[in-house]
Length: 209
Ligand code: PRP
Ligand code: URA
Image 1 (cartoon, rainbow, N blue to C red):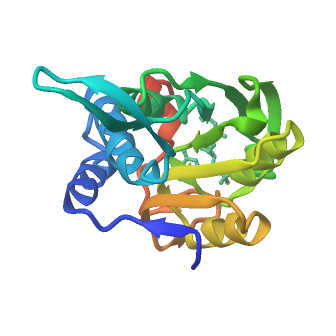
Image 2 (image 1 turned 45 degrees about the vertical axis):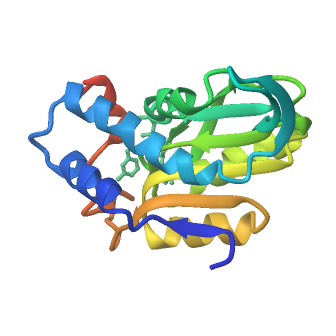
């Protein structure tokens, strides 16, 4: 699929396997979520624009590339997307951070918005939306809808585990955005949880339930 990257890097696969393990505790789960986001971010940000700047080395003055402007926004989908933010900020510490609050109705599995705050000028920024789980795709589609309604244009969506149906739905609804996923799992179960998945990402990151 054009605009869809599924990572096959052994480090990412290894870390995802530890996340899946129900015996992995909150502390390790958080650390791994951040590390995976950083590894994915390294690849997802390979098209950041550069500009030549003048630098004096101890030897001579030269023109050398640096990232142009400070126009990156990381936008986690609350709550679980928060777990990926520091991984991206480790790569680009000057990035601004927006938030989109969505929760899935437990019965209908439809997303409901409860918060949205994006950094200005959103239309000029490369926007990285983070959420570890892409299940039905409802939350991801709604988040990208909101960002576009607020003027966002260059959008990347980053997710650690995707269900095939959620990935297809997001890609079909928003074919212009770049999607990065760590692994595509088998299917959704009757509660719209990803199988084999890792359970409820928000609960595992924050130690709830
Ligand atoms: C989870 C997850 C995604 C969403 C994915 O969030 O973090 O946002 O479900 O499901 P979907 O693709 O079917 O929309 P949840 O609603 O459980 O909220 P939480 O992050 O606050 O736990
Ligand atoms: N949200 C999660 O946290 N996990 C799933 O498997 C599906 C949605």
